[in-house]
Length: 443
Ligand code: AMP
Image 1: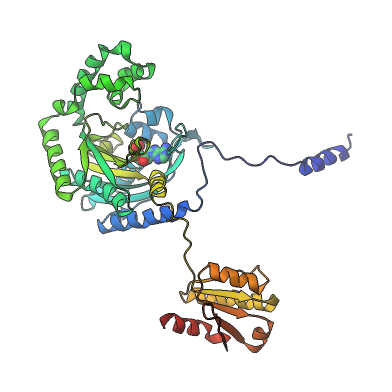
Image 2: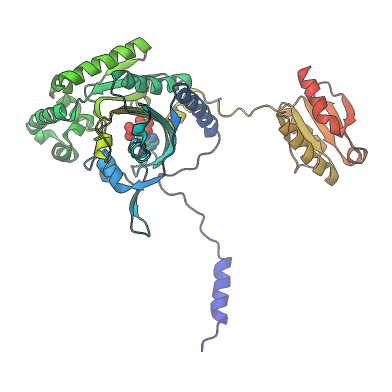
């Protein structure tokens, strides 16, 4: 029999060895201050606007069946081919971390029989998305989208409203933006256009990159938003989708543009905008920051469009629908660039609760909570001992009054209220502190 002693020794020395510091998974990040000031501001604005326009909140699960995205978004898209976080659960289910919000909303609409409710059903979400994309500036593997979806209405005013809402949220948080818009028609008119596009690019095949040659075979529309600089020139001569639109799609698009004019939404027609996902029909749009800096103005802050075929594709009835999403992380970055001060200001406090000694500290803990519960903005530093450093902190936090509780005050059932500007102080009954401060705040 071997002795257990050496094993125990080895365990103990391993425990003593320093463990390597934890690492953050590539493409992931912690969201810290000052980002929260910007995120909260966008959240308040977005939620307010969604509610005013009578959208209801929805939160779909972070995992869905992989087949939902494959069917809805399309097999030959970058998102499905390269970017999904897919895995098999212990139970053998093939699941994917939500890469976008529209397919899950469509799934929920079917699941909950929303077809039987008055149409359209309007839903909004603020959710984490996951895409295994190449991490770079403004491109994260976990990011937040705010989105709206209007399901069950085919009229062009809905398309215009989606572009309007995306723009309005950005405008309301001080980010000037412009909508790039196009129509990709019905699947039938698009099929004809695709043939024309393929015929054109076949004649230019020798000039295409390897990546674009693959696109020509698999998803020729994506050639139009190829990042290859040589493509800029080739695109100029390429057939344009507007010339291939069916009459209905053309009429629909004209009406969308008229509504945008009416609503004062700045937009520009973009014949090359096709969007990466298969489910779009008719109107597609993306929204960009207005900026002199090309690195800023080329990064989309949001996108959306009409997806009349999606619900049927995933097993529902044919249902027209339209929506958009904004990339909140990119909006935060833009706001930070434009207004760096905003996130660093800490909210001033009216009162600072200072304490001396163990009893004083206990009492200060209680007083702070009484003030907070009464809606008074208070600060304290219960771990500091010296009154001098606590008074410095009170000044820093902009407090007009300090409440001081020491050993003597605790015994007497009192507290001192010090006017920080005048330097005067008075002793009050500790039960009346909230009342006294409220009186002073009103004065
Ligand atoms: P999409 O529907 O893919 O166009 O996404 C809508 C918006 O979400 C984009 O315009 C971006 O602002 C944002 N977004 C998409 N992918 C990412 C990502 N990997 N990281 C940060 N934001 C993203």
